Amino acid sequence: MAKEKVVVVGAGPGGLAAAMQLAHAGCDVTVLERRDRPGGRTSAIERQGFRFDCGPTFFLYPRVLTEIFQSVGYDLMEEVPMRRLDPQYRLTFGGGGQLDCTADMDEMDRQIAAISPADVGALRRYMDDNRIKLEKFRPILESPFSSFKDLMRPSLLGAARHVHPMRSLGQELGRYFADPRLVIAFAFQSKYLGMSPFNCPSLFSILSFLEYEHGVWHPIGGCSRVSERMAEIATELGVTFRYNEPVQSVQMRGRRVTSLETAQAHYDADAFVVNADFADWITRTVPNAKRRRWTDEAIAKKKFSCSTFMLYLGIEGVYEDLPHHNIHISKDYDQNLREIEQTHQLSEDPSFYVQNACVTDPSLAPDGHSTLYVLVPVTHQTGSIDWAVEAPRFRELTLDRLSAIGLHDLRDRIRVEHVLTPQSWSEDYAIHKGATFNLAHNLGQMLHNRPRNRFEDLQGVYLVGGGTHPGSGLPVIYESSRITTKLLLADLQTAPAQSRPRAEPVALSTPELGA
Image (cartoon, rainbow, N blue to C red):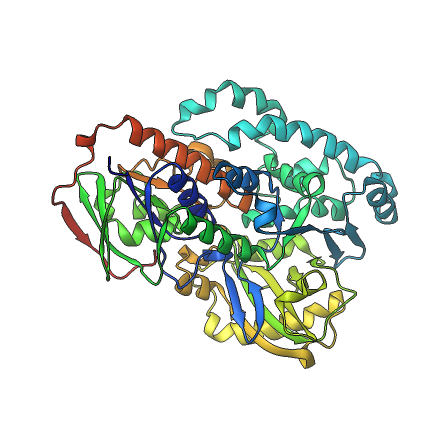
């Protein structure tokens, strides 16, 4: 009996996880990737012996991916050795103060006492409450939401009193900590969603909890090595990868997608999994008239996450006294957030993140050298900033600001440099508006209001990645692959063969697109 054919569009973390699971289940899987390597935003950038993670550098909550690896016969920690970091990161505040954050609660209380004696003990209370919250919320993160009726599930109703949907994350943390610096210390994780903690729903207080409870991990070789090994395992399981092969058009029969066209080949299949950036791919690939809910007009009204300005620096020497992860919070954090999300302008005093990975993993740079990864949250593309003009000036400002964490002599030590702006994310990585964290995670764009795992506008199409449920961040992206593959496999088993047409469909051509 012939295997069911599935085509996965995009070799990002969600697409790779889906391909592994589908191949293990017996499907004939082909992955179309527009770039020359796997990983998408979790790929590697390699320059003259220096290796950088393109996007995510924090590896959190390994449980989900560990279970996916186990389900296909592999052990994650054996395939990609990882090291739990302690301290997990250093937080510095423009308004004064510093925390070397650790899972050692006694040590955290000692450091908190130096900032705000009145807040000693609050972290333990926060941890106890969020341990319960995650337990109640896990069924929501691990289940599909296909309609508003799913909001009536007993699991969701049971979690409601722990979630407090009308509170912002900042308000939620304000219930535990009196000092505003400590509120930010346990709410800044909303950056993983590309949102301000004062606009992000309070249910995401579990993000900081996950760091302290389950650790911040560094995969040896970087987070990109996880994606590379997943692609290797998928190949071992029989998956075919086609790199440098962006999708150019779709073919449809009614509302059912029957095949995809690239410049090199025609791919028909029984089902299609889209791991590309949702808003970019759907608006460029599927004609507007073929979409009911997610039309161009509807997408234009949606809110999108922030973007990032990136510096990837290969430097001479190693900053031995700088931890692996470093987050600096600007002196006027509220103003910085307004500039990113409301006025859409560049800050003169931005918050920033620096990864100094070679203090943990020297393999990422040539001998006697190291890598620095610098991320500055900025507005997504609105037309308010001309990055061709602003990038050089903002680069200089960013290098100046790095002195706040002790990098005073950095310019003299730079040997290799690579820059990404929101324009780069949009044009080179095919990300809508350059919004690196996809659709914003407000209440109106979550659960059934997000593009659904079994995509509601097109038959035979399924979604994985940050643009669908449960949302952005590596653990939930991996979880999206589990939700989606279960739906897809159940549909293939129950659908009669005649419901999967292979007859000549109508071609719908579009310009060359990112897969």
